[in-house]
Length: 295
Image 1 (tube, rainbow, N blue to C red):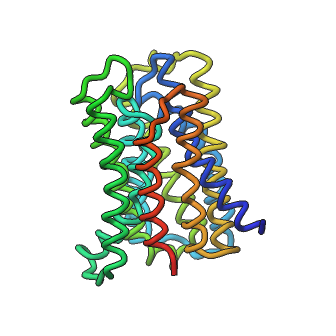
Image 2: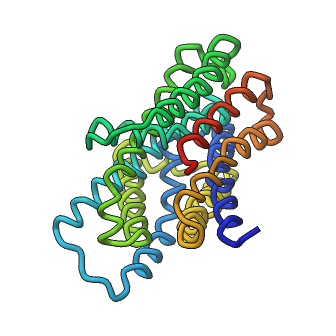
């Protein structure tokens, strides 16, 4: 296995572990606002260091650059992360990961509606296959039993809508970041945008919660530290390095291991059920992504 392929696979698995850590943290009575604050608080020094490293020898940001970075950081990392954390209170980690893996098809749809890009028949088929897989798992989860004990069917649907909003928000970031990546560089833009998101998540906590809310179980702190390092900062670096070595297309294809890894971790670490419906839905989502990304 090449180094690039190994980095892409490791990055995808690490990203997928975020949902598992969040679900574990919710068992200690913490809410989404506090949990995401701790994740970003621990990640902030790492992304500040990344920003400094990637900005060496580069021209200073213009006012336009700062405005664009702020907007991308808001939708790509702050809003997308918050909606995802909030949605995970109501749905399983497996369904959350399947919804998020609709991202390539959402980027394609945004390109059609915002930039009038033409879409091929194969791309339309890929979208149909992927969405059918998510709808299959969502329908089964909605009609059989809520993913979280004590959660109503309406709340399960609400959680799925929140996570879908997260996927849309991140797709907006991807759709509008292409030009800025060419101007600022992928590492620098990622460091800047994630730094903005970290600050916004911390400010959100300060505005919405009393300082006493920072007192949480020690397990929440350790899980948040693990989330910030292993499932946030590390995969960002690994995916970027993978793209440099094997290209964006191959990296995206390797990312298809993400839903499978979340599914397995959900079963073994969270005790989530593994059913034929989840297996078929996951296979459909992966097939759709494969159709969309293959040459």
